[in-house]
Image 1 (cartoon, one colour):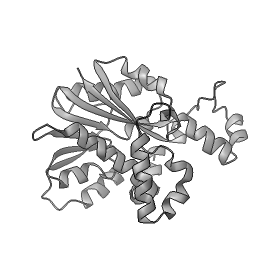
Image 2 (tube, one colour; image 1 turned 120 degrees about the vertical axis):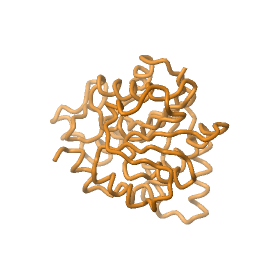
Image 3 (spheres, rainbow, N blue to C red; image 1 turned 30 degrees about the vertical axis):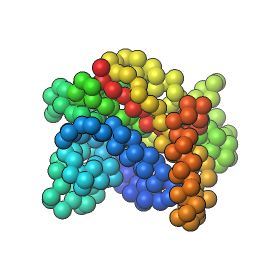
Length: 260
């Protein structure tokens, strides 16, 4: 069993996205998915790295045509368990690095909402993005999610008193960029890293969004909020999530790209 299989076989990803703090990321992402689909009649959608189907299944239950591609068998089983057979969704096992099962210029919306979390070399990240761009129609959208560097330095290294262990394990560069390996499961980037990936392809950034913003810094407080206060938190979050001066401090970001 590899590190990724082990993590998702034992991690309650579904529960995370259903918690108050997890809903912020989910609702923000869905908000921008809807924005990208405005004006597109009968869109064709693919989610690469669909996980347990939190997004793919929700979109399919709205009647949208979705192909869900997922590498981890456990996640595929959970995804399929949510379906009653009437949804226009095709769930298949596959890898973000090889979408050869699809031709060129097929999808109106291509989503990579997880793969970039778990690709540890620039070569692999560029391959995943290349495949996503290839299968997207000209003028179509590509949504790419990333885990950001600074929240881990702030919360994990300093906040959780792991700094010395991280230093001893040589997991920080001299300019405080986290060094990840597969056993750490997650790969962490900065805005300039993302921009360097995009520069390799015929794509235009439409927006770069902080999908959870400050939420995970005060996770317990967010989860304890009553519905009224949580609604106000969402109002505040949506008002600031496109502010570029705050992007690097968000745990998760969503890069909204359009294929030229």
